[in-house]
Length: 196
Image (cartoon, rainbow, N blue to C red; front, side, top):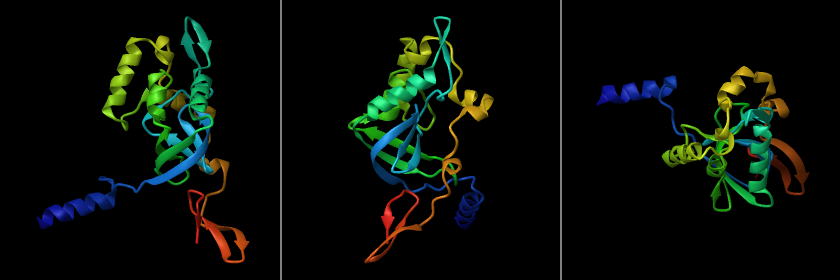
């Protein structure tokens, strides 16, 4: 028993066995930056359950190029237009976008994107999302109607064409004073929320 606990402690310490990170609920009006990326309350959120073509990525359909990345972003923008978005976000690494599971109304944004054929399911999503993708492929919807590079492969081949990381767009967020009032300084945490 003692040996087992020591082994688990070593695995956690070495990072081979990840500890669950606490989730942060974020909600409000969002802006679609790409087919799988939102900006919400000043934070960049990446949908963890789906991977959409990058904004500058093109696909082929009926032998012609089409801007599948732009179409994916436009669909995500229409899904969140005028709606409050609710996300459960996790920080994967310093300087990177928060990974998130997001909803607009009753709709899962990742599910809506995969259902339209404008994103692929990731291994981090529910098994039902992979099953939905298989049905979308059979009906040749969206990117499945022609030829395309998987978004992760396209990013590796075109590293300068992807959206910059959150840290490249703005300085690192720390709990820093944003304003002063009669009651004292107002600080913001990494999610932009006021803290005392």
